[in-house]
Image 1 (cartoon, rainbow over the protein chains, first blue to last red):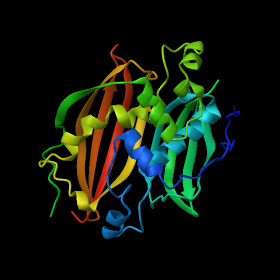
Image 2 (cartoon, helix red, strand yellow):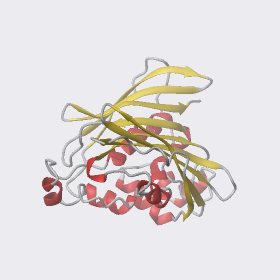
Image 3 (cartoon, chains in turn green, brown):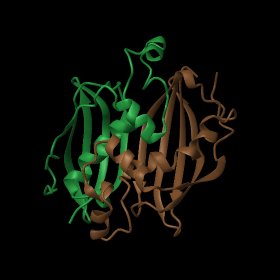
Image 4 (cartoon, helix red, strand yellow):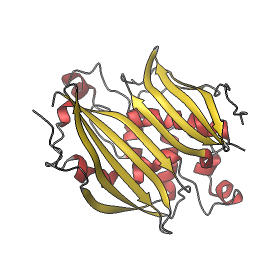
Length: 130
Length: 146
């Protein structure tokens, strides 16, 4: 468990969604939008190919917080902006920095990047510590 | 064309979701969780929970059914071909565990226009069988070229 004080960097979370991740996540989440699971459909609507579910990527941001804080109970709030598009078979990295600690709650600014692009930006987590 | 703001404040019928142990495991594995609280009943019980614990982002599963009627409401008028999920906020209360029954209500919080884009903001409020609010979600969808 990381010691979350102002200036602390969140332990980096790295994960590479495999070729069929979007299919498994579609089943697990119930979001079967074809832009995530059908290569032909995604191209027809002008995308480079199937894209990751934004809420899967947000779950990676959430996991980076709960792993740093020692469990799911610690995550009190998470807000994110979705930008760019995540794609399968490329590493996603979640980084973050503790900006403030007030009354036992750390405010963590965090982002998810892939191929050098922030696919989740301006994210802020409220994490209970101690 | 300006956005139609008449639906601001509109609520939709609450939905109920019964949280299952295997669904939590399926979701946890799909998002890469390795914490045994989400995967192993014995570990969850040893930690004081009655059953496996849902990862916080499992909110997307138990609240999903509540969202459709609002997102597809003709009075709200979202043009789906031009829509992107712009931002998302969740604020959590007590953890959800397998066996919980979660009721979710869904409301149109705001509809506005800025720079040729329409902003559609919804709020979900999810409550467990004990009446505790387990999660409040703020869902912002952006439509280009309203």
